[in-house]
Every structure is written in structure tokens, then in C-alpha cells.
Length: 355
Image (cartoon, rainbow, N blue to C red; front, side, top):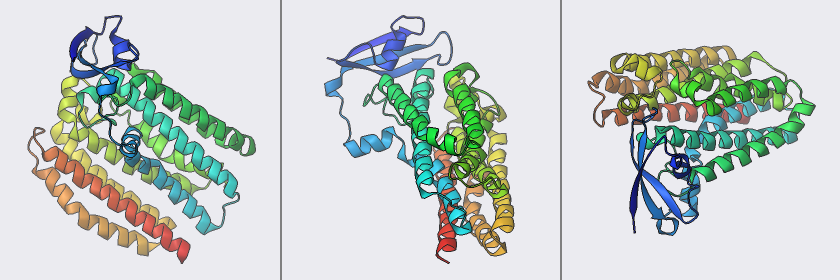
């Protein structure tokens, strides 16, 4: 029998129902959340037996819970740095490269899961239908289980980082800065970059220069300017995807009181920001390749990206309202640009290695 139960944020049961710790046989699925991100928040839960919840196949479940597609954000820069050093013949230790790679992937998994947990508790994933993995909201796994998995992967990533720090002490300052940003973002919700205008710069640092420089140092390769600028270009591209996703969710985010740069700018100025952001990325990408890869790849990549950019810019320009399915179309076209970019970049790296 299905039961509906509405709880306010002030209720002593509220957190246990959100996290799934109130029962070992029942699960509370949030069906309506009101006044999210405020002290007057109320959530209506549908209480169902855990055994009655239909979960997809193990492969689909794991792929969705761990958001496999999001691993492109770390796998691509790792590949770019790795192939750069293979081509430069500066790779000193295959063993430490493997350890560093596994450590980064476990750390990203921990952050991914913790982010899903925090966004469920704060209400982001309960309000935005396309936000998060949806594994918690569908009842496939409890929020508490996701939190514990996040802690497990974080511990494993720390264990993998210990030998790296001992052998290459220069990595420690990268880890310290990344840990400080991560703690700020994940454990101090009221001050998180998710709720601050311009706070997305934390993501730029984490997925950009901190990741590329830190990974190169962990491989035993000394710091060089190329790894830093590669991280800056990649971080700028990641920020494009983040702004694009926030633009898609601009209306429900504003209604729920979630603040980010896109919401602060408003619909019309956000359109111009996205177009300008992409154009600046192409300019940065061109400059990076001119300096470190030569004019051939700089011109070739810029021409290809420019050709595929016309439909995206035109669609941005044609949207007149944040209501409707057009925002989803813009996101898909922007994400296609992202995939085209990384495909060309990977092809370029493979070309250099095989040449």
C-alpha cells in the first residue's frame, strides 16, 4: 500500500526521510518539494516498500548512479596530459602514472557521489528534473548509501595519493588547494559555489589547471607552462558546459531560489554570455595550439569548430523565452560542440603519438 507523507524542514523526521534512514524496508520518494532552500521547506514523500521499486539492469543502474558521461570531464584532460608527455618523452614512471590516474578517478567518483547527496538534501535535484543521476530520486539507492559510498571512494583516493606525495612532494600543494575547495563546496552549503554568483570559478580551478598541473606533477614530470595553459583552456570549456546546463535550468532554478551566474544575469544577458564564452574558448584554443602545436592544428581546429558553431549561435539568438523545449535544444547543440571539440583534440593527440 502506497502512503503519502508531508514533512516540514523543522520536523525531526525530515532528514531521516530525505536520507532514507527512517526504515530498512521502506523508502521515501520525494514527489513534491515546496519553498526549497528556505526554512519553510516542505516535502511530500511517497512511502513505498523497497522490494517494490523497479531498478534497471545493474549496468544501467551503475552507469546512471556514477554518471559515467561526466567522467569525460577528467578522462579527457588526463589523456591530453598523458599523451603530451609521451610525445615529449618526459614520462618517467609508468607505475606512478597508473597510481595517479586511479587516484584522480576515485577522487572524482567521491566528489560526484557527494555532489548528488548534497544536491538531493538541498533540493536542487528534487526541483530540477534533469539534474543529478536521478538514482536517489527514483529510489534505486538511498541518499545515505550514496553518502557512504562517497566517503569510501574518498578514502581510497587518499590512500592512492599517499605514495605520490612521498615521492613527489610538489604535488602536496595541489592536493591541499583542491581539498580546501572541495570542503568549501561540499560541506558548507550556505557558502557553496553552487549558491554564489561567480562561484563557478571553483570548478574552473578544479577541472582546469589544478587537475592538469597536479596530474603532471604526480607522474613525476616537472611543472611546465603548457600543462597550466592546457588546464586553463580545458577549464574554460568545462565552464561552458556548466553555464549551458544552468541556462537550460534557468527558470526552475530561479523559482526555487538557487543562485548562480546565469540566473543573476537573467535570460537575455545569459544568451549573450554563452555565445561570448564559446567564442572566447575558440580564441583561447587557437592561441594555445599556435604556441604549443603549430599553425596547422590551430587553423584546422578553429575552422572546423567555427563551422559547427553557426547553428548553435543562431539557435541562441532565436530563443525569445526561457519557457518551452528550446532551451533543451540549445543544450544539445552546445553539448555536441563539446563532443566535437574533445574528439578533434583526442584525434590530434593520437596523430602526434603515431607520427
